[in-house]
Amino acid sequence: MLTLLPASAREIILGEPETLSLKNQDALIEYINKVQSSWTAGKNFPDDTPESYLRRLASFRVPEDDLPRLPVWEESEDEGGVTYPRGDPPAEFDARTKWSKCASISHIYDQGNCGSCWAVSTASVITDRICITTDGAFQGTISAWNIASCCTDEVKCGAGCEGGLPAKAFQHYVKNGLVTGGEFGTNQGCMPYEAKHCSHRMGKDGKFPDCHSYNETVVPKCVTACPNKGYKIAFAKDKHFGKRAYNVKAADLKKELSTYGPVVMAFEVFEDFYLYKTGIYHHTTGKSVGWHAVRIVGYGNGYWLATNSWNPEWGDHGTFKIKSFVDECSCESKYGFDTAEPK
Image (cartoon, rainbow, N blue to C red; front, side, top):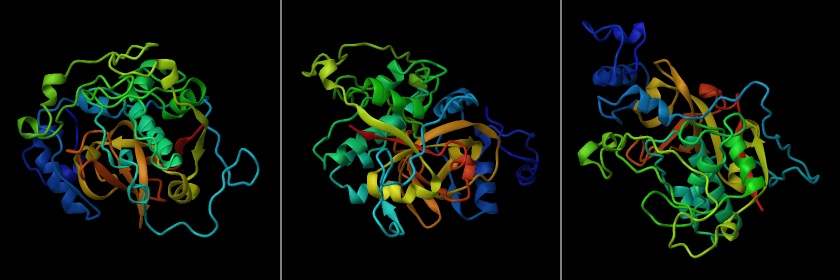
């Protein structure tokens, strides 16, 4: 189980051992809500959730030091650069509102018991941007399972349900293309997601079956024909390609989001993040668990607005806010923000 409390937090739990598992998460929730008021902690997971499962949910793979990142596009009128509207971006922005024709932006994904946050966040951003550039004509879903299955070089891209790199997934989209595919059980698109949905928090009372019943590992396999036999478009003809993949600096992110749409953000996950419910998150207590990739869809006064991939039962209906322009959890300086322009 996760070790959750530093010494300062343990002071409020007399008689408890030095480590706190999720079986005692009520004490941690009380501590977090006592020492700060920026965000509210609460239960998202059953008390007996194993650490191995929680770690799998945060599956961004920290790349090797010498692994090249995506190019940062400077604002430029020259070919190969990006251009933004003149003037300041709006003070607050929500892509779900601006591009209301694109239902995908509001959709909260569920990666299930698969370390595929890197693939799900990338596929969701690509889906949103294709819809945006087509003014809502595209209402499909780019397949996260296609990324998890076929972008598989562990050094250069990913390892299926064992984590991966969004930047390399975007490059895979540009070079090799991606087919469509809805979530598990939808039978939508060429290659639907194959890891089952499950309830991380509510158990038998939740919308989805208890996650404990789906604790097996799914191994994605790269194929060149649509697994969905009822889909009428051939695999090769179903592919969508990107024009170019690029990285966005934090200083340009407001303009990027409000002009072109969502991006992927990677950030370091600490144990208290699993208990987020509402408010503007910042690391309050607990050790580092790993790194996680999510989709950024907007911003406001002092925060980036993100959608997670742990289904709508987690957090604020599947979304969370994280402090902006303070490099919270290394979200701004370490890897920046990745995205791609559709072809």
